[in-house]
Each structure stands twice: as structure tokens, then as C-alpha cells.
Image (cartoon, rainbow, N blue to C red; front, side, top):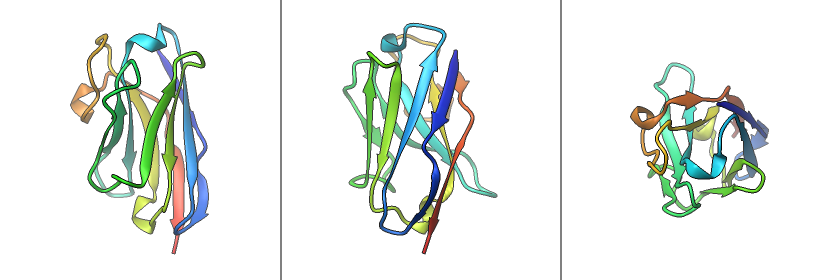
Amino acid sequence: VQLQASGGGLVQAGGSLRLSCAASGRTFSSYAMGWFRQAPGKEREFVAGISWSGGNPNYADSVKGRFTISRDNAKNTVYLQMNNLKPEDTASHYCATTAMKYALVRSRYDVDYWGKGTLVTVSS
């Protein structure tokens, strides 16, 4: 399983970015996907998850109402739309998935595969 994240960059507070993660190596539509982030000196934390069908999106409290996770199974891609960005959102963002079909991704303990991070920097 290969996961390739893109879309990070530098943005001012209040701005928006959309991250993408292209997956390959298996049937994308059978597996939940998630986004995590890790700021310097901090542990990697859950940001958002979405089920294999696109339902059951769930979010960390810190991003609820600002971030939206979605997926396009025809394109084997999961997205994270990030609005109203804050300096505390600065982190490397990682997409991730599980090895178990139809399971959910709700924490790092559900993850079997990680992509490389894409850096999001929010200036104040």
C-alpha cells in the first residue's frame, strides 16, 4: 500500500488549504482513511477519519467545524479541506489507513500504513 500526500504549504491565519492523498496498491474503496498531524516536539495526533464508503466522518475536537474530510473512490484519493487555519494547525500532516476492510480509523492504533507527511505552516 502506497500513500502519497500533497497540498501542504505556507498560509496566513484564516486561510485555507486542501490536502490530497493518493492511494495505490489495493482496492481503495474497501478501506477507511484518516488524516493525522505531528507538530515539532509533539506526538502524532488524529485529525479526521472517513469510512470506506465516505460516511461516518469523524474529527478531532480541535478541527471540528473548520476541517472537512472527503474521498473520491473513483480517483483513489482522500482529501482534507482545511478552512480558517490557525497557527496551532502548523504541523506535518499524514494520511493513513488500516489493513482491515471496513474498519474505521479513529486513532493511531487503528493505522497500519502511513504516507509521508506534507507540511502545513500557518503564520499569524
